Length: 318
Ligand SMILES: [Zn+2]
Image (cartoon, rainbow, N blue to C red):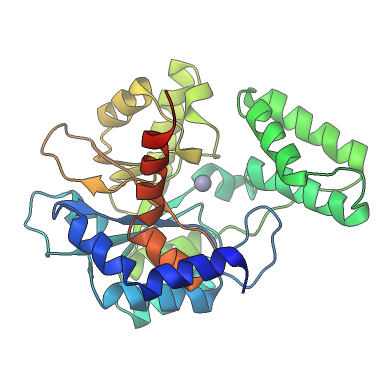
């Protein structure tokens, strides 16, 4: 067990969870954001292992009721302690691995998918980038000292590119490195329909996972509208939720989402969702879950990382 794991294990043994629960306002709900649940190895986005996923949820269910996103965002009275489960990206390991566990534990969930990429059988650009770097690293481990840093730098440069510029850059990287960037398989429409029939709320995650803040106004409107309509035509139900790719949004993105009829917007801000009866569009922060130890992920779901970050910003000199 590494030092980090030991620290969180001690935190758990000291019953930090119960302290965190006591200190929190009753109206605040942890909304958890998961990505892949799989035994696959991935250098940059390690998936959460299925056994950890099951144990984490079981641990949460001992102290919380799992409620749907719709219920959390409604005006209805909530259980004293509640949490919400959401997924992003639409990976096929959801239906293969996560959904059976969710069914077994009677847990409701929301899944934000990418209808443009499902249609084109494409890959999320961030996964394509990671795949190129992972394969390149396996070929020659000594050429770059910090691959994580390199990926971060490339990500921040590529995210402000237009779609065409980014595709060209990734293509050039593929040519230069002699590898093909491929991401994990996304669910197809039949699988999405089966998820919807099993009670999973299907949300939009935009068409192709482009950063919405890099779009012009008309591109933004078109993406948010088309992704909603495409999913609705496939699942024959209203799409009420949008999850912003990489959590990037601004006032315009919020305004357009509301105007197009979305009722809820999911963020990746690592904050508790606190209910407010304000605008028609409920803006809902989430905790992005990792793939560390059980002790750490339980404490993350209870908000420990958020409190620690806040505490760090208070002690930091301004
Ligand atoms: Zn995503």
